[in-house]
Image (tube, rainbow, N blue to C red; front, side):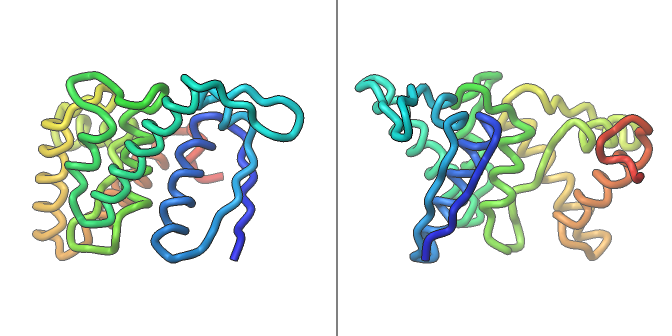
Length: 188
C-alpha cells in the first residue's frame, strides 16, 4: 500500500520521510516521498521531475539514511540513549542541521510503546525544568550525558506520580507553552 507524503521544509522533510520510511519498513508497507526541499537538504540537485544525485551526494545520503535508521531502530528496541548517541554527542550533530530538540522528537515518534520510550527535550521542557526544578539542562547542545540525566529524572518522577514518562513530559511542555503569551503553542 503506497502512502504519498508531501513535505515542505528541508530538515523536517528528511526526518519525517525517514520516520515514515522506517515505520513503513517495519509494517511491510511502502512509502512514496515527494519533496524537492528535502532532497536539496540531503544535497541532491533536482532537475525536472527526477532527482539527479551526484556520486558524493549519493554516499552522503546513504550514510545519513543509515544513521537515521540506526537511531530509529534503537528507539524501537527501547534504547533511547543509544538512539540519541547515533544522532549526536559532545556538541556535535552527526547529521547536518539536526539539533537535539528535533532529534529527540524523531526518537520519540520512532519509539515503541514501551516502559522507556525516548522523551522529547526541547526549549520549553528545558525552560520549565530550569525555572521550576532548578535543573540546568542545555537543550541546544548534543550531549548524551545530559540526555541520560534528563531521562533518569523524568522516569523517576513519573514512577513517583504513577504516570507514563511521556505523559509527564507532555504536562511539562503544555504548562510551559501555556505560560508564554507569544508562543505558537499558547492557547488561542
